[in-house]
Amino acid sequence: MKHIKKIAAAAALIACFAAGTVAADVLNLDFFPKQESTYDLKLMGDQVKEISEMSALEYRYKGDAVYDGGAMKLFGKDIPLTSKSMLVYYEGIVKLGSDLSTVHTELKKPDKLIITIPHSQVLSHEIDEDTWEVLDVDNGLFNRVTPEDNGEFVKEQKHKIEEEISRSDLTKQADQKVKKQLRRFLEMAYPKLEVTVEFVK
Image (tube, rainbow, N blue to C red; front, side):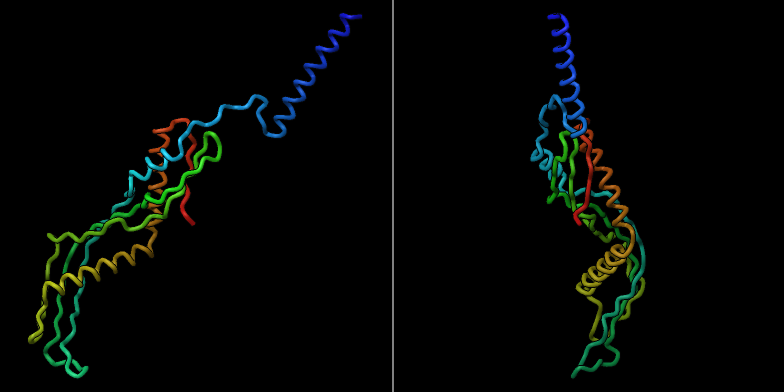
């Protein structure tokens, strides 16, 4: 009789253990809790910020443009024969990518990192001075094309190109490349970490 009671008690204990394990599974809990994550979020964020800017796409272009400097004015009216203009050929390079100085990191699970960064933008834009060639120039009477005119024209052309880029899908392409590069960087540093890169909305 005592032997039967011992068997019944053992069976009850096993049943309780099994029930507890099932309940833990249903509640999405671990019966034996896992060890806390040892990832240092601040360190991760600092490592990304050290990159500063992640250049992901390089856009090269060439073109020609007309500079119209207008005419000298007197009493609000153009003075005849004083208008100036020039035709210029040039080539430029635009680099697109993300500014990582404001990166935000969040650990959703012990092994899942959410990193939020700004969308891609123009990081640098240079017109190759060696390619800048004045194909034609028309100097007006007492109103010649000056180096200052060249400088202003360069600014105008850069602004024009950057406006065209903003209307294209180049920034989206850069976003995808930044996301891929950043994930690769972090997953190489933390092989067991699942990394998700999101952009600021």
